[in-house]
Image 1 (spheres, rainbow, N blue to C red):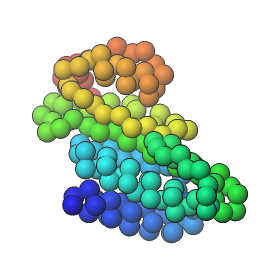
Image 2 (cartoon, rainbow, N blue to C red; image 1 turned 45 degrees about the vertical axis):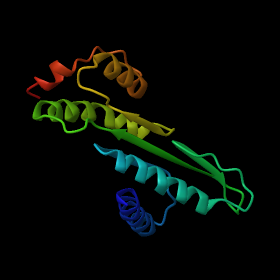
Image 3 (cartoon, rainbow, N blue to C red; image 1 turned 180 degrees about the vertical axis):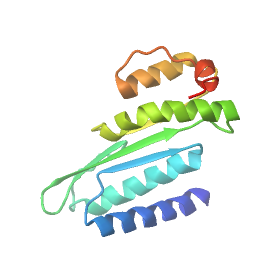
Image 4 (cartoon, one colour; image 1 turned 90 degrees about the vertical axis):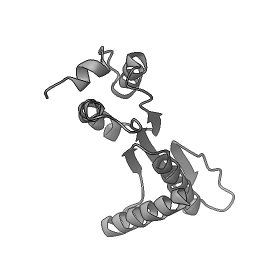
Length: 151
């Protein structure tokens, strides 16, 4: 039920925004702490790309969705999803905000989809791996140092 409700709200927001802009969907960025949000945005992106497909067109599903429109154009939709920590402490929220501040420009400019999750705040290795995937940089990150930061 909650996935469907969230998907309906997201669909309405995306439709309204793109109608006002007069543009097709090209990128969707969803950042949140719920699996419901992840599942809902996948449902919305899949529904949209299928609605754009020509009859019989091959459709590739996420996180980079692609199909051919009835006019013969290739339509790509890059779904960029980052799931945050479940029930974070105040220090974990601070760490996540610092991470997102540095990652957001990279996520926005990424020409592909992304579907990743921050698994646990005791896993610096996973954090560094994800940081490298998103930014291309090999910085040494530490959850503890980020959580204790005054920035």
